[in-house]
Image 1 (cartoon, helix red, strand yellow):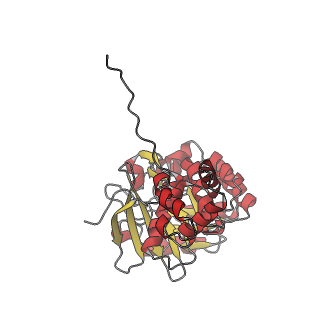
Image 2 (cartoon, rainbow, N blue to C red):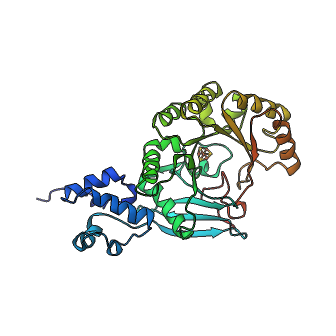
Image 3 (cartoon, rainbow, N blue to C red):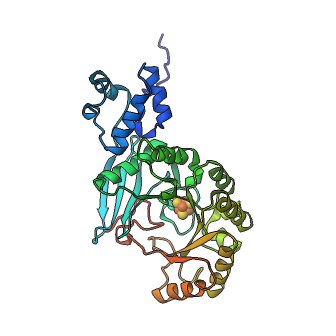
Amino acid sequence: MVLAVPIRSAPRTPSIFGLSREALVGLLSERGIPPYRAKQLFSWVYRRHVRSPEAMTSLPSALRAELPSWLDFSLPRVASLLGTSDGDTHKFVLQLSDGASVECVSMRTERRLTLCLSSQVGCALKCSFCATGLMGLRRNLTAGEIVAQVMAMGDHHAWRDDRFNIVFMGMGEPLANLGAVLEAIRILHDPEGMNLGARRVTVSTSGLVPQIAELAAAGLPVGLAVSLHATTDALRNELVPVNRRWPLAELLPAARAYGRATGRRVTLEYTLIGGVNDTPEDADRLARMARELPSKINLIPYNPVPGLPYARPDAEAVDAFARRLYPQAPAVTVRNTMGGEIWAACGQLGGLSPA
Ligand code: SF4
């Protein structure tokens, strides 16, 4: 008789990048290893950027020898790396252990390095102007896969920047994968490790109202960016379909409550699409919304995506919209588009690459 045995894949070795220090202490204690070794490991990995246990000389040699058998220190393979001609922006495609790939972007300005992270492979929310939305949702990323994006980009920049910002504005809706996003932020925030301040982190959302409250309750005063893109429900239903579930009358109070709970101004992201949402009336409504909450407005001239019926407004139209806003709104910036030539700009992540 042949017994049918369910085939189970071998349990994967946990990645150190997905473990908080507390979780690492738990893993170590199962093996009779004292908790302070977790602190040492965090220091090696996140402060000194050493990932070969053999080189972690403050650990006993027996521990160094056994660590790789039950803890994975490897990063996803960089399957592709594209840089802009000015060298300021790089788009990384990382190949994950199940073969999926995810994109992340580093952007350097005179003032700082910003790392733009993905939270999902693809996205379910189907914003009508976005390349990632065209992919549909393939899966959520784990906390370890999110932290690994920071490590891969930091390696590329040789950890020259003692301080940098991270923004969850890559592929996916971060608040649809809030558990992993929060876990990753906590790992990066750990004072014994990278010690990345919560004020250096911005989480963007297209408007998942209940999760905005959950994020506020998490006790990490990270910045919140709301991808607004329209000032009427009719247009927002079209551009950001999740608006049908949580319309502006629910989203804006949730954003206001977030700002009050964290003491931080909420960023209203507004992608300016030529002939779609760039009228003077749009500017007036946007200014009114911005005045109702502690906020700043970030205007993003649209970055075209092949196959989508939207165009970038010309420079005069962007300027006119911004000028209409300036006297009425508390703070307005126009985002200097970075990475358009390598399909790394906002809304362009989704397997696109230059011809
Ligand atoms: S804009 Fe953000 S939320 Fe909308 S489809 Fe793209 S990745 Fe998803």
